[in-house]
Image (tube, rainbow, N blue to C red):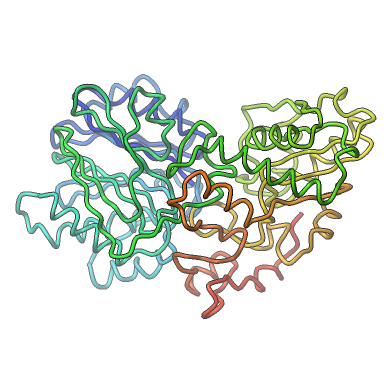
Amino acid sequence: MCGIVGVISQQPVNQLLYDALLLLQHRGQDAAGIVTGSGSKLYMHKARGMVRDVFRTRNMRALPGDYGIGQVRYPTAGNAESEEEAQPFYVNAPFGLVLAHNGNLINAVALKRELFNVDHRHINTESDTEVLINVLAHELERRTHGLPLSSEDIFAAVRAVHQRLRGSYAVVALIAGHGLLAFRDPFGIRPLCFGTAGEGGEVMVASESVALEGTGYKFERDIAPGEAIFVDLQGRVHSEQCSSSPQRNPCIFEYVYLARPDSVLDGVSVYRARLRMGETLAQRVISVLPPSEIDVVIPIPESSRPSAMQLAHKLGRPYREGFVKNRYVGRTFIMPGQAVRKKSVRQKLNAIGQEFAGRNVLLVDDSIVRGTTSREIVQMAREAGARKVYLASAAPPVRYPNIYGIDMPTASELVAHNRSVEEIRQIIGADVLIYQDLDAMKRVIREVNPDITEFEASCFDGCYIAGTLPPEEGQNRGAGVAPNTGRLSLQGAEEQGQPS
Protein backbone atom coordinates (compact mmCIF):
# COMPACT_ATOMS: atom_id res chain seq x y z
CA MET A 1 0.00 0.00 0.00
CA CYS A 2 1.27 3.43 -1.00
CA GLY A 3 -0.21 6.82 -1.74
CA ILE A 4 0.37 8.49 -5.10
CA VAL A 5 -0.51 11.88 -6.56
CA GLY A 6 0.08 13.69 -9.84
CA VAL A 7 -0.66 17.31 -10.79
CA ILE A 8 -0.80 19.42 -13.94
CA SER A 9 -1.15 23.10 -13.09
CA GLN A 10 -0.51 26.60 -14.41
CA GLN A 11 1.38 27.58 -11.24
CA PRO A 12 4.11 26.05 -9.04
CA VAL A 13 3.08 22.61 -7.74
CA ASN A 14 5.68 21.82 -5.06
CA GLN A 15 3.51 22.99 -2.14
CA LEU A 16 0.42 21.40 -3.67
CA LEU A 17 2.13 18.02 -3.96
CA TYR A 18 3.46 18.32 -0.40
CA ASP A 19 -0.03 19.06 0.95
CA ALA A 20 -1.54 16.15 -1.01
CA LEU A 21 1.09 13.75 0.34
CA LEU A 22 0.31 14.86 3.89
CA LEU A 23 -3.32 13.92 3.21
CA LEU A 24 -2.14 10.51 1.98
CA GLN A 25 0.41 9.94 4.76
CA HIS A 26 -1.76 7.16 6.26
CA ARG A 27 -0.97 5.08 3.17
CA GLY A 28 2.77 4.94 3.87
CA GLN A 29 5.26 6.26 6.38
CA ASP A 30 8.46 4.57 5.20
CA ALA A 31 9.53 7.00 2.46
CA ALA A 32 8.35 9.96 0.43
CA GLY A 33 9.31 11.52 -2.88
CA ILE A 34 8.35 14.37 -5.22
CA VAL A 35 9.35 15.08 -8.81
CA THR A 36 8.43 18.34 -10.52
CA GLY A 37 8.81 19.46 -14.09
CA SER A 38 9.44 22.82 -15.73
CA GLY A 39 9.40 22.61 -19.50
CA SER A 40 11.40 19.47 -20.29
CA LYS A 41 13.56 19.63 -17.14
CA LEU A 42 12.75 17.43 -14.14
CA TYR A 43 13.64 17.96 -10.46
CA MET A 44 13.54 15.23 -7.81
CA HIS A 45 13.85 14.82 -4.07
CA LYS A 46 13.08 11.60 -2.19
CA ALA A 47 14.22 9.94 1.01
CA ARG A 48 13.13 7.59 3.77
CA GLY A 49 10.86 9.06 6.42
CA MET A 50 7.61 10.94 6.88
CA VAL A 51 6.64 13.76 4.51
CA ARG A 52 7.33 16.49 7.07
CA ASP A 53 10.82 15.09 7.68
CA VAL A 54 11.81 14.40 4.07
CA PHE A 55 10.91 17.85 2.71
CA ARG A 56 12.56 20.87 4.31
CA THR A 57 12.42 24.43 2.99
CA ARG A 58 15.61 23.97 0.98
CA ASN A 59 14.20 20.82 -0.63
CA MET A 60 10.98 22.56 -1.60
CA ARG A 61 12.85 25.47 -3.18
CA ALA A 62 14.75 22.94 -5.31
CA LEU A 63 11.46 21.62 -6.79
CA PRO A 64 10.29 24.30 -9.26
CA GLY A 65 7.79 23.65 -12.02
CA ASP A 66 4.10 23.51 -12.82
CA TYR A 67 3.62 19.75 -13.10
CA GLY A 68 4.73 16.85 -10.94
CA ILE A 69 4.07 13.61 -9.08
CA GLY A 70 4.62 12.40 -5.55
CA GLN A 71 4.45 9.24 -3.47
CA VAL A 72 4.37 8.06 0.13
CA ARG A 73 5.51 4.48 0.56
CA TYR A 74 5.59 1.54 2.78
CA PRO A 75 7.46 -1.40 1.35
CA THR A 76 5.86 -4.65 0.22
CA ALA A 77 8.59 -5.68 -2.20
CA GLY A 78 12.28 -5.00 -2.47
CA ASN A 79 14.65 -3.70 0.19
CA ALA A 80 12.87 -1.55 2.75
CA GLU A 81 16.15 -0.18 4.11
CA SER A 82 17.38 1.19 0.79
CA GLU A 83 17.09 4.90 0.03
CA GLU A 84 17.42 3.97 -3.65
CA GLU A 85 14.06 2.23 -3.61
CA ALA A 86 12.12 5.30 -2.51
CA GLN A 87 9.85 6.45 -5.32
CA PRO A 88 9.44 8.00 -7.87
CA PHE A 89 11.83 6.25 -10.28
CA TYR A 90 13.42 7.89 -13.33
CA VAL A 91 14.65 6.71 -16.73
CA ASN A 92 16.05 9.09 -19.32
CA ALA A 93 14.57 7.50 -22.46
CA PRO A 94 12.26 8.01 -24.13
CA PHE A 95 11.78 11.73 -23.44
CA GLY A 96 12.58 11.45 -19.72
CA LEU A 97 10.10 9.39 -17.72
CA VAL A 98 9.32 9.44 -13.98
CA LEU A 99 6.91 7.00 -12.34
CA ALA A 100 5.41 6.07 -8.97
CA HIS A 101 2.97 3.28 -8.30
CA ASN A 102 0.78 1.71 -5.65
CA GLY A 103 0.47 -2.06 -5.74
CA ASN A 104 2.60 -5.12 -6.29
CA LEU A 105 3.70 -6.94 -9.44
CA ILE A 106 3.59 -10.70 -8.94
CA ASN A 107 5.63 -11.43 -12.09
CA ALA A 108 8.41 -8.91 -11.37
CA VAL A 109 11.18 -11.54 -11.37
CA ALA A 110 10.19 -12.90 -14.79
CA LEU A 111 9.81 -9.38 -16.18
CA LYS A 112 13.26 -8.46 -14.88
CA ARG A 113 14.81 -11.34 -16.84
CA GLU A 114 12.77 -10.41 -19.90
CA LEU A 115 13.84 -6.77 -19.71
CA PHE A 116 17.51 -7.77 -19.52
CA ASN A 117 17.54 -10.57 -22.09
CA VAL A 118 15.01 -9.29 -24.64
CA ASP A 119 14.49 -5.56 -24.13
CA HIS A 120 18.15 -4.89 -23.15
CA ARG A 121 17.21 -2.76 -20.15
CA HIS A 122 19.12 -2.86 -16.87
CA ILE A 123 17.37 -3.03 -13.48
CA ASN A 124 19.51 -1.82 -10.59
CA THR A 125 17.28 -2.36 -7.52
CA GLU A 126 14.89 -4.97 -6.14
CA SER A 127 11.90 -2.66 -6.55
CA ASP A 128 9.05 -3.76 -8.80
CA THR A 129 8.48 -0.06 -9.56
CA GLU A 130 11.78 0.04 -11.43
CA VAL A 131 10.59 -2.97 -13.40
CA LEU A 132 7.29 -1.24 -14.17
CA ILE A 133 8.85 2.03 -15.37
CA ASN A 134 11.22 0.13 -17.67
CA VAL A 135 8.37 -1.89 -19.18
CA LEU A 136 6.45 1.34 -19.83
CA ALA A 137 9.56 3.08 -21.22
CA HIS A 138 10.28 0.19 -23.56
CA GLU A 139 6.71 0.10 -24.88
CA LEU A 140 6.69 3.87 -25.40
CA GLU A 141 10.01 3.77 -27.23
CA ARG A 142 8.80 0.99 -29.54
CA ARG A 143 5.93 3.21 -30.69
CA THR A 144 7.59 6.60 -31.05
CA HIS A 145 11.03 6.05 -32.64
CA GLY A 146 11.88 9.69 -31.88
CA LEU A 147 8.73 11.06 -33.50
CA PRO A 148 6.51 13.61 -31.70
CA LEU A 149 4.52 11.91 -28.95
CA SER A 150 0.76 11.56 -29.33
CA SER A 151 -1.90 10.35 -26.87
CA GLU A 152 -2.52 7.42 -29.25
CA ASP A 153 1.10 6.32 -28.81
CA ILE A 154 0.76 6.56 -25.04
CA PHE A 155 -2.45 4.52 -24.90
CA ALA A 156 -0.98 1.89 -27.23
CA ALA A 157 1.98 1.60 -24.84
CA VAL A 158 -0.34 1.21 -21.84
CA ARG A 159 -2.26 -1.55 -23.66
CA ALA A 160 1.03 -3.40 -24.11
CA VAL A 161 1.93 -2.80 -20.46
CA HIS A 162 -1.37 -4.38 -19.36
CA GLN A 163 -0.55 -7.45 -21.42
CA ARG A 164 2.85 -7.87 -19.77
CA LEU A 165 2.13 -7.04 -16.12
CA ARG A 166 0.45 -9.29 -13.56
CA GLY A 167 -0.71 -8.08 -10.17
CA SER A 168 -2.06 -4.80 -8.87
CA TYR A 169 -0.93 -1.36 -9.95
CA ALA A 170 -2.22 2.19 -9.86
CA VAL A 171 0.32 4.40 -11.64
CA VAL A 172 1.19 8.07 -12.06
CA ALA A 173 3.98 9.04 -14.45
CA LEU A 174 5.48 12.21 -15.90
CA ILE A 175 6.67 12.37 -19.48
CA ALA A 176 9.09 15.30 -19.53
CA GLY A 177 7.85 18.18 -21.65
CA HIS A 178 4.58 16.40 -22.46
CA GLY A 179 2.38 15.79 -19.42
CA LEU A 180 0.98 13.41 -16.83
CA LEU A 181 -0.03 9.77 -17.42
CA ALA A 182 -2.13 7.76 -14.97
CA PHE A 183 -3.55 4.26 -15.29
CA ARG A 184 -4.98 1.38 -13.28
CA ASP A 185 -4.67 -2.38 -13.60
CA PRO A 186 -7.52 -4.18 -15.42
CA PHE A 187 -9.01 -5.39 -12.11
CA GLY A 188 -8.94 -1.97 -10.44
CA ILE A 189 -7.49 -3.48 -7.27
CA ARG A 190 -5.82 -0.30 -6.01
CA PRO A 191 -7.77 2.99 -6.04
CA LEU A 192 -7.11 5.98 -8.31
CA CYS A 193 -9.24 9.05 -9.09
CA PHE A 194 -8.88 12.52 -10.56
CA GLY A 195 -10.29 16.00 -10.07
CA THR A 196 -10.10 19.52 -11.47
CA ALA A 197 -9.80 23.06 -10.14
CA GLY A 198 -10.23 26.61 -11.35
CA GLU A 199 -11.28 27.64 -14.84
CA GLY A 200 -9.35 24.84 -16.52
CA GLY A 201 -5.85 23.52 -16.90
CA GLU A 202 -5.69 22.31 -13.28
CA VAL A 203 -5.88 18.52 -12.88
CA MET A 204 -4.92 16.25 -9.99
CA VAL A 205 -4.76 12.45 -9.88
CA ALA A 206 -4.59 10.74 -6.47
CA SER A 207 -5.05 7.46 -4.65
CA GLU A 208 -7.96 8.79 -2.59
CA SER A 209 -10.55 11.52 -3.05
CA VAL A 210 -9.52 13.10 0.27
CA ALA A 211 -6.30 14.33 -1.38
CA LEU A 212 -8.35 16.17 -4.01
CA GLU A 213 -10.87 17.71 -1.64
CA GLY A 214 -8.23 18.69 0.91
CA THR A 215 -6.29 20.69 -1.69
CA GLY A 216 -9.27 22.48 -3.27
CA TYR A 217 -9.86 20.17 -6.22
CA LYS A 218 -13.29 18.98 -7.29
CA PHE A 219 -13.61 15.20 -7.53
CA GLU A 220 -14.54 14.27 -11.11
CA ARG A 221 -14.51 10.47 -11.12
CA ASP A 222 -12.54 7.32 -10.45
CA ILE A 223 -10.19 6.13 -13.15
CA ALA A 224 -11.79 2.91 -14.38
CA PRO A 225 -10.01 -0.45 -14.18
CA GLY A 226 -7.75 -0.78 -17.22
CA GLU A 227 -8.26 2.86 -18.18
CA ALA A 228 -5.47 5.35 -18.85
CA ILE A 229 -5.73 9.12 -18.79
CA PHE A 230 -3.15 11.49 -20.21
CA VAL A 231 -3.18 15.15 -19.17
CA ASP A 232 -1.14 17.39 -21.42
CA LEU A 233 0.68 20.48 -20.15
CA GLN A 234 -2.32 22.66 -20.99
CA GLY A 235 -4.49 20.57 -18.67
CA ARG A 236 -6.49 18.80 -21.39
CA VAL A 237 -7.57 15.32 -20.32
CA HIS A 238 -7.41 12.47 -22.84
CA SER A 239 -8.70 9.06 -21.78
CA GLU A 240 -9.02 5.57 -23.24
CA GLN A 241 -9.86 2.09 -22.03
CA CYS A 242 -6.65 0.13 -22.57
CA SER A 243 -7.74 -3.33 -21.42
CA SER A 244 -9.72 -5.80 -23.50
CA SER A 245 -11.48 -7.26 -20.45
CA PRO A 246 -11.58 -4.84 -17.51
CA GLN A 247 -13.32 -5.85 -14.27
CA ARG A 248 -14.04 -3.72 -11.21
CA ASN A 249 -12.64 -5.71 -8.27
CA PRO A 250 -11.44 -3.19 -5.67
CA CYS A 251 -9.47 -4.41 -2.68
CA ILE A 252 -12.00 -4.89 0.11
CA PHE A 253 -9.31 -4.25 2.74
CA GLU A 254 -9.26 -0.61 1.59
CA TYR A 255 -12.77 -0.23 3.06
CA VAL A 256 -11.91 -2.17 6.20
CA TYR A 257 -8.72 -0.39 7.19
CA LEU A 258 -6.42 1.18 4.61
CA ALA A 259 -8.34 4.20 3.32
CA ARG A 260 -9.29 7.30 5.27
CA PRO A 261 -12.97 7.26 6.32
CA ASP A 262 -13.63 10.57 4.54
CA SER A 263 -12.58 9.14 1.17
CA VAL A 264 -14.86 7.75 -1.52
CA LEU A 265 -13.38 4.81 -3.45
CA ASP A 266 -15.05 3.44 -6.57
CA GLY A 267 -18.29 5.17 -5.69
CA VAL A 268 -18.36 3.87 -2.10
CA SER A 269 -18.02 6.14 0.92
CA VAL A 270 -15.49 4.45 3.20
CA TYR A 271 -17.27 5.85 6.25
CA ARG A 272 -20.65 4.55 5.12
CA ALA A 273 -19.14 1.15 4.32
CA ARG A 274 -17.71 0.91 7.83
CA LEU A 275 -21.06 1.86 9.35
CA ARG A 276 -22.71 -0.92 7.38
CA MET A 277 -20.02 -3.35 8.53
CA GLY A 278 -21.00 -2.46 12.08
CA GLU A 279 -24.60 -3.40 11.34
CA THR A 280 -23.73 -6.83 9.98
CA LEU A 281 -21.25 -7.38 12.80
CA ALA A 282 -24.03 -6.62 15.30
CA GLN A 283 -26.05 -9.45 13.79
CA ARG A 284 -23.10 -11.79 14.31
CA VAL A 285 -22.68 -10.65 17.90
CA ILE A 286 -26.38 -11.23 18.68
CA SER A 287 -26.13 -14.77 17.28
CA VAL A 288 -23.26 -15.57 19.65
CA LEU A 289 -23.70 -13.39 22.72
CA PRO A 290 -26.85 -11.88 24.32
CA PRO A 291 -26.52 -8.06 24.32
CA SER A 292 -27.47 -8.09 28.00
CA GLU A 293 -24.08 -9.70 28.68
CA ILE A 294 -22.33 -6.59 27.32
CA ASP A 295 -21.93 -3.55 29.57
CA VAL A 296 -20.08 -1.31 27.14
CA VAL A 297 -18.79 -1.26 23.52
CA ILE A 298 -15.27 0.16 23.10
CA PRO A 299 -13.46 0.65 19.76
CA ILE A 300 -9.77 0.00 19.25
CA PRO A 301 -8.70 3.27 17.56
CA GLU A 302 -8.87 4.45 14.85
CA SER A 303 -10.41 2.63 11.88
CA SER A 304 -12.93 0.61 13.91
CA ARG A 305 -14.82 3.61 15.31
CA PRO A 306 -17.62 3.85 12.70
CA SER A 307 -18.28 0.10 12.90
CA ALA A 308 -18.18 0.13 16.70
CA MET A 309 -20.59 3.08 16.94
CA GLN A 310 -23.12 1.43 14.63
CA LEU A 311 -22.74 -1.92 16.39
CA ALA A 312 -23.40 -0.31 19.79
CA HIS A 313 -26.45 1.45 18.37
CA LYS A 314 -27.86 -1.79 16.97
CA LEU A 315 -27.20 -3.65 20.24
CA GLY A 316 -28.63 -0.85 22.37
CA ARG A 317 -25.49 -0.79 24.52
CA PRO A 318 -23.38 2.22 25.59
CA TYR A 319 -20.50 3.27 23.33
CA ARG A 320 -17.40 4.56 25.10
CA GLU A 321 -13.86 5.60 24.20
CA GLY A 322 -11.71 3.37 26.39
CA PHE A 323 -8.32 3.80 24.74
CA VAL A 324 -6.26 6.92 24.08
CA LYS A 325 -4.01 6.61 21.05
CA ASN A 326 -0.54 8.07 20.67
CA ARG A 327 -0.64 9.25 17.06
CA TYR A 328 3.15 9.37 16.76
CA VAL A 329 3.73 5.62 16.75
CA GLY A 330 3.55 3.82 13.40
CA ARG A 331 1.17 1.05 12.41
CA THR A 332 2.00 -2.15 14.26
CA PHE A 333 1.11 -4.64 11.53
CA ILE A 334 3.65 -2.93 9.26
CA MET A 335 6.48 -3.13 11.80
CA PRO A 336 9.19 -5.66 10.99
CA GLY A 337 9.33 -7.90 14.08
CA GLN A 338 6.92 -9.37 16.59
CA ALA A 339 8.91 -8.07 19.56
CA VAL A 340 8.88 -4.55 18.13
CA ARG A 341 5.13 -4.78 17.45
CA LYS A 342 4.42 -6.03 20.98
CA LYS A 343 6.36 -3.19 22.60
CA SER A 344 4.75 -0.67 20.25
CA VAL A 345 1.19 -1.59 21.29
CA ARG A 346 1.81 -0.35 24.84
CA GLN A 347 3.38 2.84 23.50
CA LYS A 348 0.54 3.33 21.07
CA LEU A 349 -2.52 2.81 23.30
CA ASN A 350 -3.35 3.56 26.91
CA ALA A 351 -6.50 2.33 28.66
CA ILE A 352 -8.87 4.64 30.55
CA GLY A 353 -9.39 2.55 33.67
CA GLN A 354 -12.88 3.73 34.68
CA GLU A 355 -14.36 2.51 31.38
CA PHE A 356 -13.20 -1.05 32.08
CA ALA A 357 -13.37 -1.55 35.84
CA GLY A 358 -15.88 -4.25 36.78
CA ARG A 359 -17.50 -4.35 33.32
CA ASN A 360 -18.08 -6.91 30.60
CA VAL A 361 -16.43 -5.09 27.68
CA LEU A 362 -16.95 -5.70 23.96
CA LEU A 363 -13.85 -4.47 22.12
CA VAL A 364 -14.26 -3.80 18.39
CA ASP A 365 -11.27 -3.87 16.03
CA ASP A 366 -11.21 -3.30 12.27
CA SER A 367 -9.33 -6.57 11.66
CA ILE A 368 -7.07 -9.14 13.29
CA VAL A 369 -3.96 -9.89 11.25
CA ARG A 370 -1.11 -11.35 13.28
CA GLY A 371 -2.94 -11.36 16.61
CA THR A 372 -0.07 -9.68 18.47
CA THR A 373 -1.89 -6.37 18.90
CA SER A 374 -5.18 -8.06 19.80
CA ARG A 375 -3.60 -10.19 22.52
CA GLU A 376 -1.87 -7.19 24.07
CA ILE A 377 -5.06 -5.09 24.01
CA VAL A 378 -7.14 -7.86 25.59
CA GLN A 379 -4.53 -8.09 28.33
CA MET A 380 -4.57 -4.30 28.79
CA ALA A 381 -8.37 -4.42 29.22
CA ARG A 382 -8.03 -7.08 31.92
CA GLU A 383 -5.31 -5.11 33.70
CA ALA A 384 -7.62 -2.08 33.64
CA GLY A 385 -10.20 -4.10 35.61
CA ALA A 386 -12.53 -5.59 32.99
CA ARG A 387 -14.53 -8.53 34.32
CA LYS A 388 -14.88 -10.13 30.89
CA VAL A 389 -13.33 -9.12 27.57
CA TYR A 390 -15.16 -9.93 24.35
CA LEU A 391 -13.53 -9.11 21.00
CA ALA A 392 -15.33 -8.49 17.69
CA SER A 393 -13.56 -8.00 14.35
CA ALA A 394 -15.26 -5.86 11.70
CA ALA A 395 -13.41 -7.98 9.11
CA PRO A 396 -13.49 -11.75 8.55
CA PRO A 397 -10.52 -13.92 9.58
CA VAL A 398 -7.35 -12.99 7.67
CA ARG A 399 -6.33 -16.50 6.62
CA TYR A 400 -4.17 -15.91 3.52
CA PRO A 401 -1.28 -13.62 2.55
CA ASN A 402 -1.97 -10.52 0.52
CA ILE A 403 0.27 -10.38 -2.56
CA TYR A 404 -1.26 -7.27 -4.14
CA GLY A 405 0.37 -4.54 -2.10
CA ILE A 406 -0.38 -5.07 1.61
CA ASP A 407 2.49 -6.17 3.82
CA MET A 408 1.19 -9.49 5.17
CA PRO A 409 2.97 -11.93 2.90
CA THR A 410 3.49 -15.17 4.84
CA ALA A 411 1.02 -17.52 6.48
CA SER A 412 3.25 -18.00 9.51
CA GLU A 413 2.43 -14.41 10.49
CA LEU A 414 -1.37 -14.80 10.25
CA VAL A 415 -3.05 -15.96 13.44
CA ALA A 416 -6.14 -17.23 11.57
CA HIS A 417 -4.37 -19.39 9.00
CA ASN A 418 -5.37 -23.06 9.46
CA ARG A 419 -6.96 -22.29 12.83
CA SER A 420 -10.53 -22.37 14.07
CA VAL A 421 -12.12 -19.34 15.72
CA GLU A 422 -11.88 -21.14 19.07
CA GLU A 423 -8.14 -21.72 18.60
CA ILE A 424 -7.65 -18.06 17.71
CA ARG A 425 -9.69 -17.01 20.75
CA GLN A 426 -7.42 -19.02 23.01
CA ILE A 427 -4.27 -17.47 21.50
CA ILE A 428 -5.66 -13.93 21.83
CA GLY A 429 -7.05 -14.58 25.31
CA ALA A 430 -10.55 -13.13 24.85
CA ASP A 431 -13.58 -14.64 26.58
CA VAL A 432 -15.51 -14.56 23.29
CA LEU A 433 -14.22 -13.88 19.75
CA ILE A 434 -16.61 -12.86 16.97
CA TYR A 435 -15.71 -12.30 13.32
CA GLN A 436 -17.50 -10.51 10.50
CA ASP A 437 -19.11 -12.63 7.78
CA LEU A 438 -17.39 -12.17 4.41
CA ASP A 439 -20.51 -12.54 2.27
CA ALA A 440 -22.39 -10.07 4.46
CA MET A 441 -19.52 -7.57 4.25
CA LYS A 442 -19.41 -7.82 0.46
CA ARG A 443 -23.18 -7.44 0.26
CA VAL A 444 -23.42 -4.24 2.29
CA ILE A 445 -20.58 -2.55 0.36
CA ARG A 446 -22.10 -3.66 -2.93
CA GLU A 447 -25.41 -2.14 -1.88
CA VAL A 448 -23.70 1.26 -1.70
CA ASN A 449 -22.47 0.85 -5.31
CA PRO A 450 -24.21 -1.92 -7.28
CA ASP A 451 -21.70 -1.46 -10.13
CA ILE A 452 -19.17 -3.38 -8.04
CA THR A 453 -19.90 -7.03 -8.78
CA GLU A 454 -16.95 -8.55 -6.92
CA PHE A 455 -14.01 -7.63 -4.70
CA GLU A 456 -10.37 -8.54 -4.35
CA ALA A 457 -10.63 -10.34 -0.98
CA SER A 458 -7.75 -12.80 -1.20
CA CYS A 459 -6.58 -12.29 2.38
CA PHE A 460 -9.99 -13.58 3.50
CA ASP A 461 -10.93 -16.18 0.86
CA GLY A 462 -7.62 -17.14 -0.81
CA CYS A 463 -8.87 -16.30 -4.32
CA TYR A 464 -6.20 -14.38 -6.24
CA ILE A 465 -8.01 -12.74 -9.15
CA ALA A 466 -4.88 -11.30 -10.83
CA GLY A 467 -2.88 -14.51 -10.51
CA THR A 468 -0.74 -16.13 -7.85
CA LEU A 469 2.96 -15.81 -7.18
CA PRO A 470 5.17 -17.83 -9.54
CA PRO A 471 7.46 -20.37 -7.81
CA GLU A 472 10.54 -18.11 -7.70
CA GLU A 473 8.55 -15.27 -6.12
CA GLY A 474 6.76 -17.63 -3.75
CA GLN A 475 10.03 -19.05 -2.46
CA ASN A 476 11.27 -15.53 -1.74
CA ARG A 477 8.15 -14.87 0.35
CA GLY A 478 7.91 -18.25 2.06
CA ALA A 479 5.01 -19.38 -0.10
CA GLY A 480 4.67 -21.48 -3.22
CA VAL A 481 1.93 -21.83 -5.78
CA ALA A 482 -0.81 -24.42 -5.67
CA PRO A 483 -1.33 -25.37 -9.34
CA ASN A 484 -4.81 -24.91 -10.86
CA THR A 485 -6.39 -23.71 -7.62
CA GLY A 486 -6.08 -19.94 -7.59
CA ARG A 487 -4.92 -20.23 -3.97
CA LEU A 488 -1.47 -19.97 -2.51
CA SER A 489 0.13 -23.11 -1.15
CA LEU A 490 1.42 -22.04 2.24
CA GLN A 491 2.47 -25.29 3.90
CA GLY A 492 6.15 -24.50 3.63
CA ALA A 493 5.67 -21.07 5.19
CA GLU A 494 3.51 -22.50 7.97
CA GLU A 495 6.24 -24.94 8.94
CA GLN A 496 8.67 -22.08 9.52
CA GLY A 497 7.06 -21.13 12.82
CA GLN A 498 3.92 -20.15 14.67
CA PRO A 499 2.59 -16.61 14.77
CA SER A 500 2.73 -14.87 18.11
